[in-house]
Amino acid sequence: MTTPDTPPGPLTVAAVQAEPVPGDLTGNAATAARLVHQAADAGAGLVVLPELFLSAYHPPTLRADPDGTDLAAVDGGRINDPRLDPLRAAARDRRVVVVVGAAVRHADARRTCASVVLDRSGTAHAGYDKQHLWGPDEQELFVPGERGATLVVDGWRLGLGVCYDGCFPEHARAAAADRAHGYLCPSGYVAGSAHRRDLYYAARALDNTMYVAFANSVGGAEPWRFNGGAALYDPEGRPLGRAADDGEAVIVGTFDPVELFRVRSTHRMLADRRPHLGGERALLTA
Image (cartoon, rainbow, N blue to C red; front, side):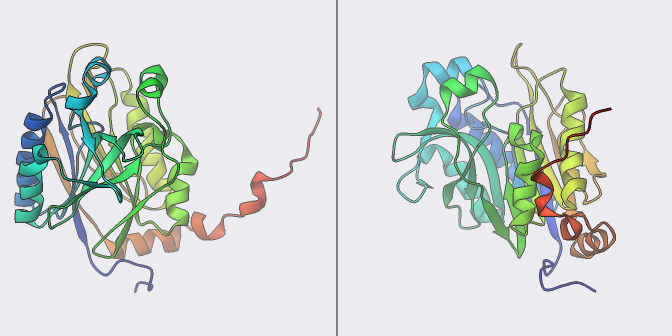
């Protein structure tokens, strides 16, 4: 048994980890296309790649070469950059939706750390701008996004976040409040952060009884050396699959509407939450 708000069928999802080359948007798009084909061969209909994958998460390069690293979004968010052609073709030819991190220059001149969404026709849009910028590099390079976004794929409502967004429970909760069934987080976690990396996204899944896809980069030179661990989590926060801390990997799993309904029927945090609990509090002295 399910409800009208439950997705109509399963969705097979891939979370990817790989090492992009700083500043090589053309080459990184080709790498992303290869990984999309690999995910599609494993049955994925949705593929999530890491934060800033198309430029690589490398602040010195992003600072020195904005023209070479940025994608230009026209009014409405559409991106027509020919450097994306291999990735566009992979999405179109394999009938796969792709979410990939990029630096995006908007029509109003804002530069954002974005999730670019390619639909099954291969059309690319700036789908979501990271709302929580981590550290001085990001705060210097980018403007924070001002609103959340929900991506709908085959009836699945999927909240979009980027890396540090997932450290804020209220960000994923806002997606759940928008009736999200899942949460997609392209990320860039560096070496030494594995404990937090593995805790945050499992917690967001359990907090909100929803599936989570976490994609991360690997490799790179200090201090921007990334630690992989790409994973998919079920609505109780258990890993459906997790990659090692190094090496390229494509983790594929199925988001199951029957399991989603079962968990939400058993663990009723979303239904039972009392919204006013963030209001006035009593002060006790002992």
